[in-house]
Amino acid sequence: MPVPNEQTMPGVEAPDIWPLASAKARLSEVVERAQASPQVITRNGKPTAVIVSAEEWARKGVRKGTLAEFLLASPLRGADLDIERLRDPGRDVAL
Image 1 (cartoon, rainbow, N blue to C red):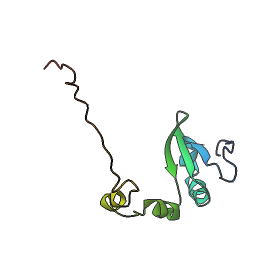
Image 2 (tube, helix red, strand yellow):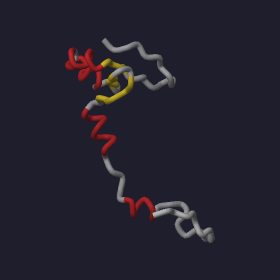
Image 3 (cartoon, rainbow, N blue to C red):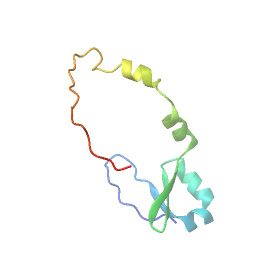
Image 4 (cartoon, rainbow, N blue to C red):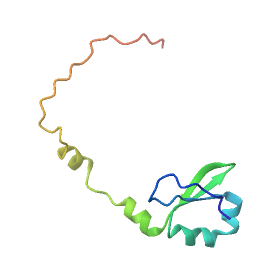
């Protein structure tokens, strides 16, 4: 049985939280509930894993372009930035 979880953001369904032993014993239910909202698995009371629907996983995993495309689309592209390098010699390091 998932641990009761307070909803923290209005309009956003809070994930169910399952202790690892409960999640193992009721895996089918955990997977079924993951179709509606993420299911958090805990070990010793600390979040260890999250189960989400395959649809959610695919949606989150879609790339929206390359890093180069992202940088080229930057609103700072073409801005006349004058960034001065510090002339600090740095710190002494014993080798």
